[in-house]
Length: 506
Image (tube, rainbow, N blue to C red; front, side):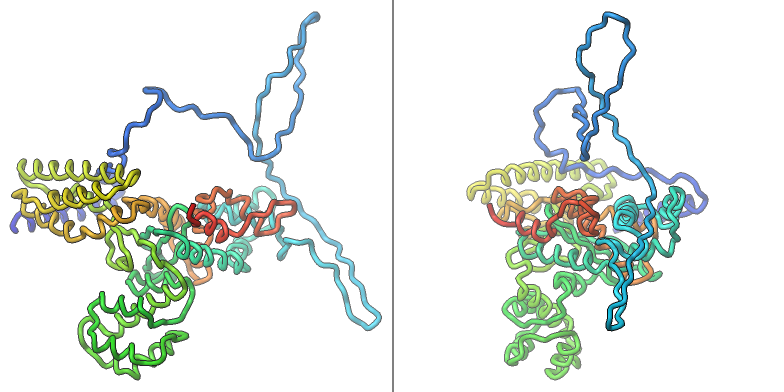
């Protein structure tokens, strides 16, 4: 106990010293490197040892123009063909068009004006709008720098006009982003989730990531509670539904049987919005109860979970998380990298403690490597052996009390850590989510936060759509060109359709 308190005080002193160094502009201490369990357990890849991989041929995504470059040669030389050499160039030019729109007056006095070309909105063409969206969201630039760039090449545009291009008239993108999440939740066998801090309207909030190998979706809200996560899983629907999934959820959260029976006895099972649901709970006397757990909260979470199932979302999908409590819904699996990280970062005080820590880490690394092998060729015999081996690792007594308590805690999560034995298609870690959410962290560092709900939603939507395009093999530039109506641009199918095609069983 004394050693634990001493360690906590030492950690506090270190944090205070780092804060003082930061305020003084001094260099802080180096970050501790991650344990590297996932890469360390990868099998060796055959290949050329000690040689760097070759870059490969340059393959431009545009038509290549051939130009003959003559050479000065002496008389009597023989022509031996051409030596190809590809050069790529970027041409930034401003093209302004003044449309002289015909205006006619009909015999009955009505005025007819010729329409503008397709894709023209306001005083800026679709290619310029695409460039603005690409630079701001994918290039992670700031609005003032983007304004400076455009003005320097000759575009007459202000920061306010760029802001309008980024947020106004984006209903189509917002709708497609919502449908991307719906398609992912309906077809995916698993999703991986994570969250990070976000600023909105000068207040701290949280950005939640939901995705897998086919899609990415972001949603920023003021809370990171389980109620908020369930609401995000409804993907814009506002109804509350009492069904088997809702009542199973309430039982799993220890809501009393008489209260569940009171809800089940009522003929109403679907409620259109929050007002209708709150009125129903008030009629049944839920709002006046002071028992633990909170009946209103658990019943509301259950009804939202019922809505998620009623809309055919996450019917048999596994939710993979880093053990944050708000994500523990439905079939839940835990990240092995985060579990091993607890052992890796454990404070040790003696050589005996350090030896015990390293021994347990090696056992976990070996077990993790065998889980990877099991994923490639699952069978019942190996599954039973891995379950028994898990017990031997996490029920052992090392003599290091803090480590033993940690192992007992991890053993209590056995079902979630070993979900991969029943569902070998799910990953063993949440690295994908952490990679996805880095763009939100970068955006936060570059631009701090958002000021309007529309700006927040547009930021989340375009970052999520960009990640989804990359996972589906679609260039974000081509996607924006197709949606904005750039003349002559090939059509990119709706992303939800591509996700549903990828999610279909082979």
